[in-house]
Structure formats: C-alpha cells, structure tokens
Image 1 (cartoon, rainbow, N blue to C red):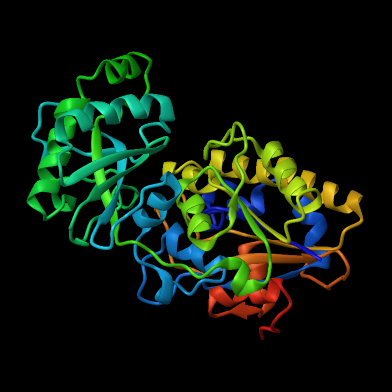
Image 2 (image 1 turned 90 degrees about the vertical axis):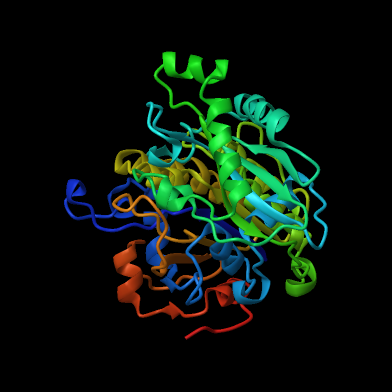
Length: 404
C-alpha cells in the first residue's frame, strides 16, 4: 500500500456573498474531487490545539502526526532547518518577511502594512535586498539568511523568544501597535525601511506598478526543534514535496527526504504537474511508502483577499495535480490511500488563518465508501465524522486506528 497526502494550504474558507453563499472549495470546478467524494470518507479534523495560534507550522505538524503541544518550538526554527542553519541551543530564530508598507513622509510607526509578501517577490530580487540589509545591520549577534521569495530568517545569538505579530494578521493596519517591544529588533525594522525604500530594485518595482519590498518584519521566534523520526514513528519511508521552507524544515527535522521540483515557487502559478510527477515517481520508482505534497497557493490567495484567485488555485490543485497523480497511481496498479485536506482555513474575509476545523477527504483505491457525494466544509461538518486531535488523523490514513 502506498500513502499520499495532498495538502492545499489554507484551502478551507467561509461562504462568500459574491459566490452565491458558497465557499471557494464549493464553487471551484473540481472534477477529480467530485469523482472521489462519493467513494471516500469525508470528515472534519481539528489541526490547531486549543490555546495555540492557527499557523501553518502547528497545523502541518498535526497533519504529519506530530502533537504540536509536544513538538512545537516556533515557526522560524523549522525554516532554519530547511535553509541549513545549524542553530545552537541558545539561538533564537525569527522569520524575516520582506513586506510592503506605505511609503509617504509619515514616521515609520504610522505606516500601514499593505502586503505581507511584497507582491510575492522573486527569491533572486529578495536576496539582493536582504544583502543590502545585511551589510548595514548584521553584527556578531544578529545574522540574516536568505530563504525563498519574501520569507527569510534572522538568527539572534543568545536571544529571547519575544512576542511578535505575524504581518498577515494585521494587513491594512498601522505598524505602531504591532512593532517589537525589544528595542534592537524595533530599530532594525525601522532602519530596514530606510535601506530598502531607496534601493534601485524597489524603485524599479514601483515604476512597474509592483509592490516594493521596503521593510523587514520579524515574527515567529523560537528555539531549535527536536522532532521524532517520521520513519521510526510510522515505519514508513517518507518524502516531502513543497516550495515552502517551513515544510522543508519539518521534513529535515523528521528525517524525510525533500524532493525539489523545478518551477515550484509557492505561488499561484507553481508547477502543479511537476509536483504530481515527482510524487508519482517517489512512490512508484523510488519506493517511498509515503509522500506529502504541499501547495501554498490557496493560502496566499486567502491572504491577498482574492476569492477569484483562491478559486483558481483550488481548480489548479484538482485538475493539474490531484488528477495527474491519481491517474499515475491508477495506471501503476499499486494500491494506495490518498488524504486531501487543508492545514487550516484562510478565509478571504479576514485574510489570515483561523482555528476552525478543516474538511478532509480520505480515498482508498481498494475500497468504496459511501460518502456524501461532495467534498466541502459543509458536507464534512454534516458527516458527523470528527477527529478531535488532528495529529491522530494520520493514524486513520495508515489504518492504525479507527477514529470515531
């Protein structure tokens, strides 16, 4: 038996008036999921433990079977693993977003956060901008590392896990109320604006009508993580396919193989077909037992507040990834179980994550279940099948436990 999880990050949502009261998942044209739903198990899972923030970090740990209450030490340390940063026990990692703030003459604390991703800036341009920041702000205590697109890293030697606000939680708000309480971090954010706002790359982006990456923003502080080996825990050889450093870092910590896919970029127009082919090859040619295929696009479109692009991302996920992967597995004759789900909702109304339970679809190529006929937030709720502890859902996938 082969096992695969296809995760559409932030795919779950709320009914939207412009979609006649449907969610993006309900409204999207998803012929593959429509064919699977009547013969699959469909239900709800709580991936965010009570009292924890609804982030992709905690949620994806849950989906992979790791109880966040036991394993979570912060988001940035997981990304540090992906980048290859060997954190010391007393190091603190902080996610460093390149964001867009308003660029008038107002003081920094009165500026407004316009875009948490600087228009999904390319890694190539972001690396040049971060180098300009590094040249002025890095010292023997603070060290910057390039990640992917707008997502980068600051290591604070002998630092403190200070409270910090994710920029996607406060879009459209003035920065003053959300700046770090730590004086040095606050100064570095303010100084980064002075460095970046006049950088030639940002001046050129503004000429082209693109959002400038004109400020650093620190968040997600944490210490070095320790994850149990995925293979030892589950007796399955696992591989990760994702364009996002967070997921790659989880894979490194869990001892899973990271599979790189050319053109996979964490954006709407990622290489869906390439991810499907890579997953099929890992399962059928490289003899992996389990593959986790992560697609960031629905989450990004939710943060952008665009139901149009969120619908499109779900349609791409269905028609270009899930369909191709299913066709390859069916053609091989291998038996397989496929779990399709988001990690958390990212409703376009609020443009950030929520802790609501997520709908999942579990398909087994060797069995036919009498499902509700459709895969959606509503049908999952009406199914009565609820996994209260999301980190136990993987036990259901691996048929280790019957979850009531």
